[in-house]
Amino acid sequence: MESSAHLRHLRMAPRKISVVVALVRGMPVAKAISTLQFTRRAAAAPVKKLIESAMANATDLSKGSVDIDKLWVKMISVDQGPTGRRYMPRAMGRATRINKKTSHIHVVLSDASLKAKK
Image (tube, rainbow, N blue to C red):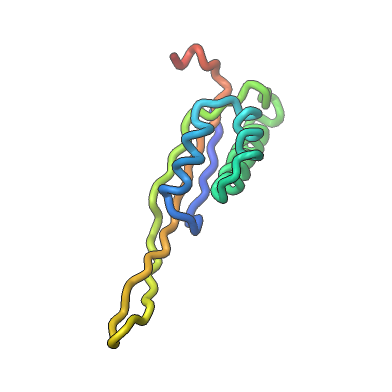
């Protein structure tokens, strides 16, 4: 059984989130959450919350019959969202653009065994 969760329009650059996402890709859910809990990156908190949301979705979809200890992170990806553009005044009447990047994170959890995947 698979369950998924999506986090859209997170106001953080995708290159910063992808470092954290690479840490937990393919891990069992319990190990991924404990890894994210002690990771000292700002992106660790929303990724941890998203994985916990996907766990709750799995419990809800299966009506409580799924074993949480058997879930693992099958797929997790980061995409770039829309960029907010701001302008900052500079010298001699010029202006420079400041890009406020956003991210979309998608996670899929599965309870199928890791060995069946390989």
